[in-house]
Length: 80
Image 1: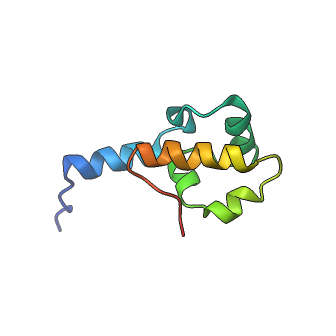
Image 2 (image 1 turned 30 degrees about the vertical axis):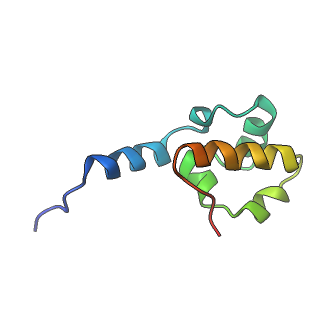
Image 3 (image 1 turned 45 degrees about the vertical axis):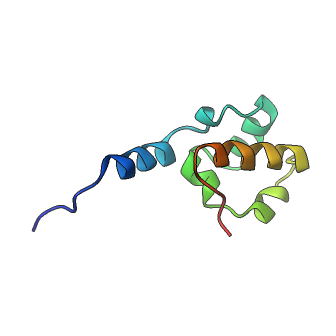
């Protein structure tokens, strides 16, 4: 058996998804709320729909917008 070839773009995307949420350069408050809810990597965050993020305790509309914008700047989006 041989391993599937991974392209540089795919490796970069996987690396970003496995990266700590610090790479999103979010405010301290937003970062702390995500960590309190066991969302530690970019992949953790992008697997959660915006509606579910919005109902997290102490995560308001501005924080949600901050997350969506930061993830979007990196070519990613939140789950549907």
